[in-house]
Length: 365
Image (cartoon, rainbow, N blue to C red; front, side, top):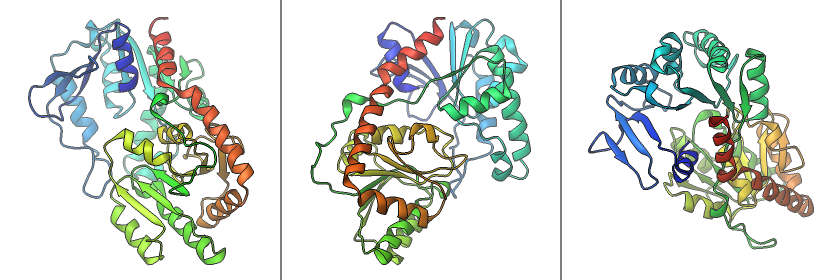
């Protein structure tokens, strides 16, 4: 949203960003791109100590919005993110809050029956709420989905709704892929939060299997931090992978992440819960890295990879399946180079400048 918003400002739009105040100083500020931030009081964090989302946060945000003196109906356009969903309920129940403003909502993830695995108590409520909101919001405004499979699921819930597909994006100009045949620092790169559903443990297990069964030592860099960081580092130590796997911890600079990616050969995202779209996948493509991912209901949308086009889809969520896929890939340099070229070609379609024009098209029609 930030990347699109700053481009809209550059094209003459005035953009106010309503959010929790997470900074010191005045509740309002303007950044270098010209975006005007309006900070709401009451921020208590997104996560619990165990790394799971705080259930009360959506309620706290809703209350903060309702108490604010910001008149949403003064805006020509209201562009909102899906999470934490309760603010969308408020707009439906109190339509005067947004009145004649044109509404656009980015719907990043459709959980469907996954809600029932998330929580026994809140799951059924989330399931019904999601289904209702997709139907109602897509009639009140435009729902933007970020992956083809998600768009199809949304159409099942809202066959007559106003739905459109706009992918995530990347700053293509910030990537300088290494030339073909350049020496690599890492064989594999992972980027993301270290959370249980990201299944980085399966990547470590796959590296161990390759070393023990095939005598292949692939090096990997794990970029990111999260509640599973300590456990994953210990797992790598137990498996004897400390000489093969490097944990960077949290990295705040996008430039640094991009630079590290360009020193690897393959991007592995073993997550089983991505909601379809993935910015890190597109960043990997821009760095010239084909992807290896599990083909599962809530993982990365298979259409963003195209088995054999930009990467490889592993049919079973297992360390064994992942190790076999990696073994085949690294044993076939010609196929790996073909996938690399496919990834670079795909990345050209996801530049933020192109994505921003798609959003502008929605706003102005």
